[in-house]
Image 1 (cartoon, rainbow, N blue to C red):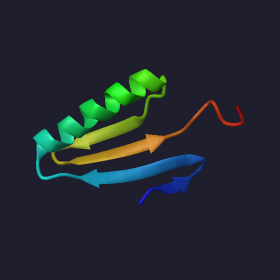
Image 2: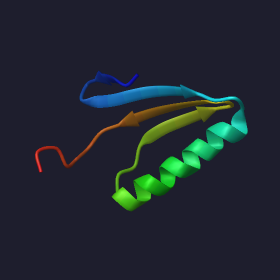
Image 3: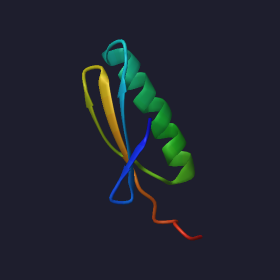
Length: 59
């Protein structure tokens, strides 16, 4: 479940292992590139934390 803090959407994901976490990040990276929106995120082994904000608000 996404949560909101200071106009930022935050979500932590847990995967089976590092390979699944990395695969998820690769898929998200491709989508982010296509949309020209880039998340702030971190990865530690099987966990990925994502923070999303937008500069397009109100458009």
